[in-house]
Length: 300
Image 1 (cartoon, rainbow, N blue to C red):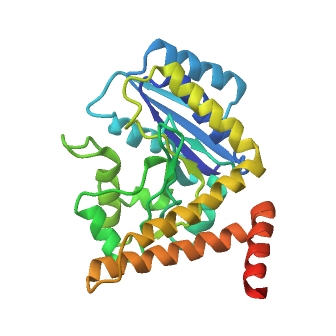
Image 2: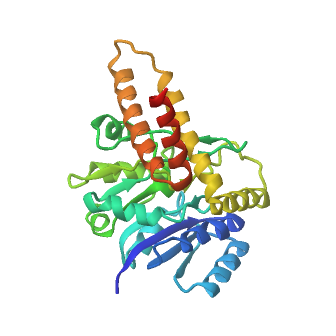
Image 3: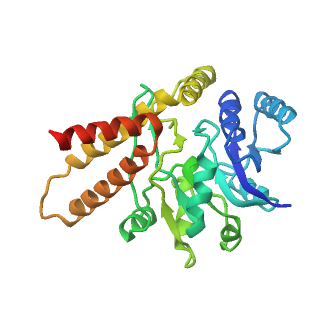
């Protein structure tokens, strides 16, 4: 019997953060899911945490393997042979999903077969960063095909049917190439690929850059803090308002010159600002605040 989504969580030795990351998948508004935790030579601590999670929620399946080549991509492919989800979503074992992430991916995939939500990265100092890309434009598809990436694993999703049509699926990545990028290149190269870039942030991405040397406990404490913040809707809506401000600032960095690339980036920047702004208008607290601010401007 099928389910709405298969969630694939690759893991190696991030046991303490895995507990919080996996919980954010189990707490989705879409509950009809299965969660595949795929171990790539995971140590005993990680296996114990997975068993603890499984004892509390039977939607979790654990695939335990010895350490494989690179990041154990071949194990992801083997797990997906057993997938029952209409769609497949990916979650890094040190990231967090907002509760509506799967629902948003299902919405995007109604008219596509490969999608991603707006990347939202939390820096080691607690400052958010975001970067925009629009896969409906050939520039951004070429951007990825040329070896650069703007889609974190935790933001991406695709239909299971489309995955089964790929020539290889997940496979060992050549040295010097990022695993996620290698997969996105395979997907975008498929002639039947219909990609869509979402404009809604539904993932908190905690990149390892800037956290080198952090203990597993410190990494877990950071995720625990943000997990609490996510439950405070008033705080988080105010936090998301900064996205519009950030995008506007980034847009301003590109002066109006006779440079096609800069003009293209400006166009994409304003498209994204407008889409995010309209989404924020629908939020109870922040939408009211923005509408009042807009009214005061027009009345002045």
